[in-house]
Length: 104
Ligand SMILES: [Zn+2]
Image 1: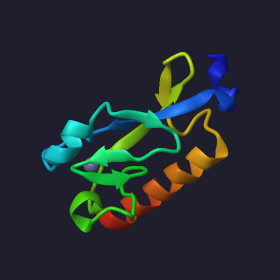
Image 2: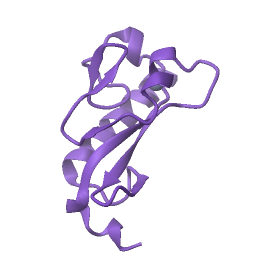
Image 3: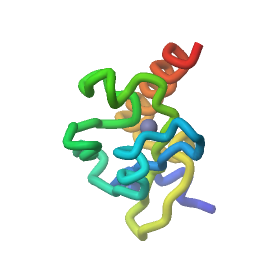
């Protein structure tokens, strides 16, 4: 797919709830929530830029295993790592870093 090279087309992001027993109710509810790339997700009434966003309370971010997807102009989505603009990639890297910190 050519979209991977056209990073400018990433318009939105989509919350993907982790599929495990510890999944929070709020995060299950947030699954599939799609917002503009520079907007916040609404997760249990908290505003999170990405899973594990330090702006959220520990209640919402510690041990969160949720991920995000990038959503392209056409409504296509792909794994967030590929074909991202820089800003979104930074967000993703931060999320991944936090995730590793909390799960170990
Ligand atoms: Zn989560």
